[in-house]
Image (cartoon, rainbow, N blue to C red; front, side, top):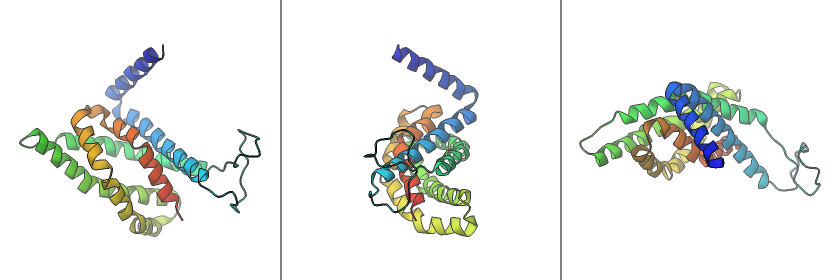
Length: 201
């Protein structure tokens, strides 16, 4: 029963992706960016010291006094989801650009695609993320530039330790229409890293 339901959901998703690719990818990317922020906040609170001076808001989920009270920044989660919506058309377009790159052999084509992705789009994407998030937080152009200056390079180095290998698999084995979804699913933890790194003060 569960497998049949999953199959139907996947079929419906593929049909929606074929008829409305930008809208479908927008919803998917938005949800996964928001989920990444939720993961980042949950992990961040789990690591907090009990003697945190900031007064917490009690969670309505549990009345167990032994549990650490929950604080949740819903505006931050909404900003992450909004960024996912804004980024999705760009990501969809970019995977189409990569698919049109061809070389003399399959391995050379893959190598060039990964190199172009990581040396051109990755730096742009990292800077775009920090800029847009700073603007959504109301810090203005100077705040956005400052955040990029402080955080982009370390984030980009972390990106290069993870994404080249994944993109090699994604670009060689996953159908074009599912590459953004695959990247978004794998990027759930990466989005949590971005959200947590962006929230550092």
